[in-house]
Length: 578
Ligand SMILES: [Zn+2]
Ligand SMILES: [Zn+2]
Image 1 (cartoon, rainbow, N blue to C red):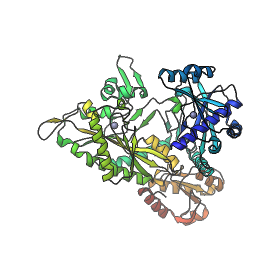
Image 2: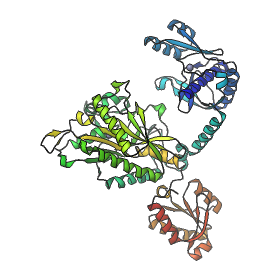
Image 3: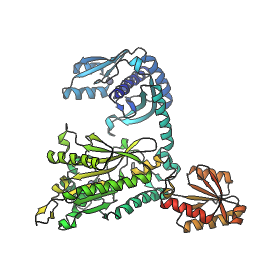
Image 4: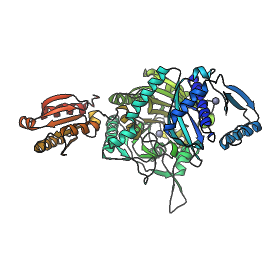
């Protein structure tokens, strides 16, 4: 991806050049490549998306004279002089100077920018297939204490075909955006009074969340998992012992007591509390493995600028589980977790592969524990992947501070990848909490702790499901499974009878009682993506049938109510995907 990153980064220079030329008083700040393109942040710039076309035109005009990126090494003094009117660049220059880094400018055409390098060789030939996408506000360096800047997003590809493909997938993603569908399908909402990043689930959204969780629970309970329940807050000492206080405090919400000086935190994960259930009594090797599951709410203090729909929230839960076991039991437990995961992914139709999230060996200070144990567990995880014939790849730097992870990366209906499940073999938390069991030989030993989540966070999973299915959930997940549509008011009583019969069979049915035309009723049912519509008029009433229609517009003609119920029941029980 190095070449694509260079292309993206080079195009962000071009964007800055165009904006500086059109709005000479604006101040370019930072412009990195990102996953799908690039952005550039500007101070003292007020524009709207209508201006993007004008900027693009300017970019195409300027790039004609960009033969290369010329590197110019400068002293901090020279750099400060050049950017004397731009406090943002001055801040960067001061930082580089303090760290003793070389300071370089890059010049392309007549545009000069402070930059470390990483560009294409021939900008005028290579920067061709680009598009500016949107304008957003962003705090300088991501902190709300800093001034708000204007961010322009764009994308660029080596060929027009790749750009066109990307733009059409973007259009499809826009249609499926969970924030848009969440509103249209009435699944969740946010309130300024409650706060940013704190989603409120409506009856339909809460139902979806419950169905997803119940499915996981039903599979777990067959596998010997027991549910525990733990409070949302805990003393700082707990997190000091676990290591979260040192490594994670900036992401934790602090809670103040009115009555004591004690320092509390909202918990960002369940693991430390589960160790205390384990430690609450003496354990024998015969008691192990112990498998605790917990769906408690968790809280993380995310940066306000990074909050987005259900993708990044401050309040969420996990289908979390901690297995305390003997070292000799780890393989079997992990294999079971992996096969449960396989079963659940199949139900949703996700393709996936695993990432072995290992240490960043360049930054040992980020991790706790003995490097020898890290080596052992990293190799172990690799063996487990091979033994289970699982497609996997390495992810250096993706480990937690206490253990490497086996992370499932799922691919959704649009080909985008999301991390869902995780399995971690952890020797460190049992050590830090001094957990023990009495072994066969009467000796006290340390158990191993396996951390495991299958769908990860149900809230985030909900977002992925909304976009994966484009809101057209499989029948078992649909908040309303059947809509009964009477043709005239005359047929309302019969429609209600059909509705009651469906409800009596545990099928989620609604009757459209509005005095609207049939066309309007069908259109509205289709907009809310209800899987089945049952149309009832005089003819159906007389024959005791319903006219069945699905959300794709297919007409099935008249069917007996009993037959319809049997068919839908089967689809629900099998969690059928179509
Ligand atoms: Zn650059
Ligand atoms: Zn955990």
